[in-house]
Image (spheres, rainbow, N blue to C red):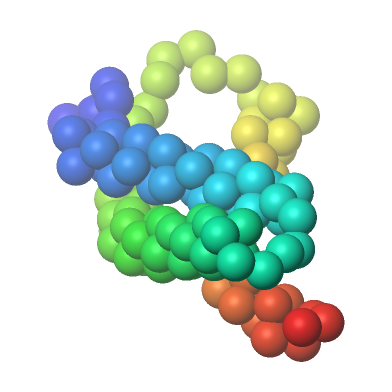
Length: 117
């Protein structure tokens, strides 16, 4: 039996992780653009940063089972798939995104811990 598309669990994990990563990036950029101040502004930036970290951990929690699923399940086969450089570009993009999906939530706390306070 050949699959024509990914099963439901793979699609749900894919889109959940994608939305979480995009939200974490957006929250991080928004929090970084906020001014450093005291009082209410400080509380607001602390809230945004805490939300950014929570979303990042949730993205990692979804990315791990998704990566396991991808390694254990075969990709759907399509008839008439081109060969040559388009396949090489597809594989490079696929592995690059998978690596980034797992690495991004881990590098955030590492970079923050060695950066200026």
